[in-house]
Length: 325
Image (cartoon, rainbow, N blue to C red; front, side, top):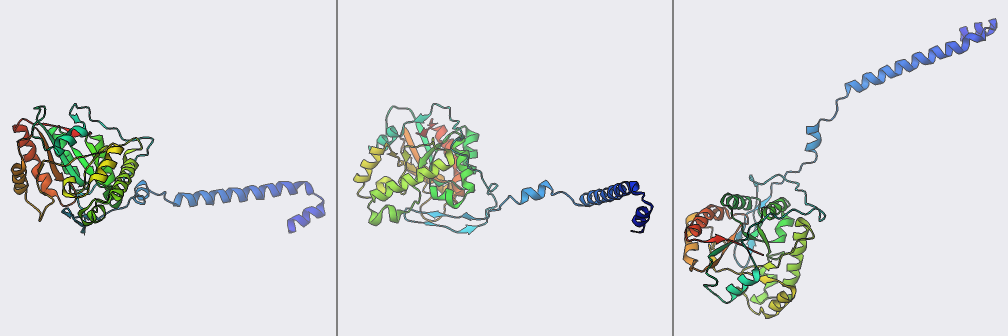
């Protein structure tokens, strides 16, 4: 202020603008320096840290002991489960089905073969490996690897509720489909009490559950996906008053597939690899079209153990392997 007064008194005002410019420039340089110094002290967020914030760990799986009446579930930590947060492909970019083999069989033909309890047809020996109640994150991947190692495709009857309860299983379904296996509809809930009250088929509820399951399958595999192959939980032949639902299924273009061979992996207490293989041999009747019932749900580890033995035995008997479409 004293400087300004002196300048004012001396009427030397021409120096005042220059002094103001010098003061402002000095202040600006100082502020820029402080800001740069502060930024250099702040570390950027690492890529590893940012990725961790988008990962959720799922440690729930189910150990299911199946029979035709119920599915008991027990939560355990799944050490073999694949990475979580599976991205479901949008309908506009569905996964591609890669089965280019000639061993796709029209389900209507095999349906007729089973319903009429035939043993012989055209003489061509074909085995249909079928797996119910999946997908699971523990057993299904093992089965897929065995099939791939042997160059074989199979038919998987999917329970939609599994896909909603265990999101990781959606990735397994995509793998199953893109590896060229056939996908069948095994209802959404798989609840015998609702599907078959007093062992009689509730046709209306059954069809609603089939339709609901198809929508869930489409949500994973794309809107283009459709299957006409279905399997009744417990099998069609187990239940009564099926005439109404049979007409409804026929009208919608569905064909149900039962079986003529089984490992009994869903009956009674868990069975060993040897017990499952022996049961398969006991129920084998020398049919030229053999449809084998197995399960790939949680807890069916010995089914995966026995599968190579079953495949080798069928190969030795001269069977090829087919899928149902």
